[in-house]
Length: 157
Length: 160
Image 1 (cartoon, one colour):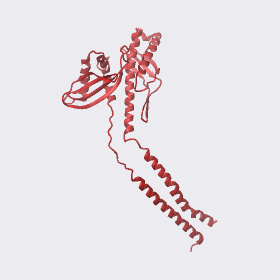
Image 2 (spheres, one colour):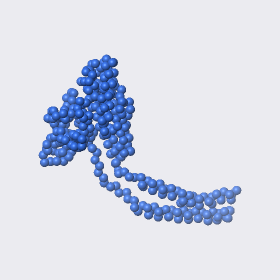
Image 3 (cartoon, helix red, strand yellow):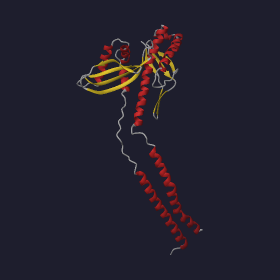
Image 4 (cartoon, chains in turn blue, yellow):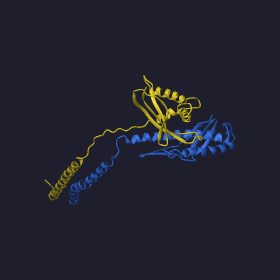
């Protein structure tokens, strides 16, 4: 029984040495080599891309705000409505339909980001038109994906 | 003194072989890593990158001028060919408040027509040119105009 136990101890150092030299070290070598080849970016490149993504989205939001303002004005002008007329639910429906058509035409023309079309629920409060976005607008820059719901509020006076 | 002498010496020999292989192996890998690390440098190289001022331009465009109008509206009016002086006056107010020190700043506002850049309004420069601001964005135009949107570019060229 004792002899058997000692036999186990006899091979321990040898097997550990073989394991370390022929398995652990090659694995370490392969891992280091793969890390070395996966560092193509310069320091700060990702952070810069992140800031650019925010800017790109902010520019699209500015465009949407102004496009909504012009679409609302054009829809009111086409229908010969004032903001007061929109209190009537039928007039509001007609206005919403026309407004959305104009807005989508504007949004289609924006070249930098794909702004989702047919994306808004419209709410009219006093002299304000509020567009509540249903889907996100997605901006991609390198490995960064930024998504935001492009809702808007425009004042019609 | 020593019980199980046979077992003791057997394990000593195998242990020694184990340590020997371990030592040789470590030595081998040390040389491998030394040879490979020769070409690796960890020097951080200087690299300059610029972030555009586009989001600051958006803040200027959103700045209200009257109760109904902001700078973006004045740009549309000027693009239509009217009231360029008003746009010049309001942009001067904003830009001098932010960038002007002892001297007022000079700047140019362009719009793009297809690929060519056309001057919309400018504040003329003196001799001191040192670019302080450079940004561009796309803004929509009222529906009754021919184009749906224009790209504009604002550059502060220096001081007057």
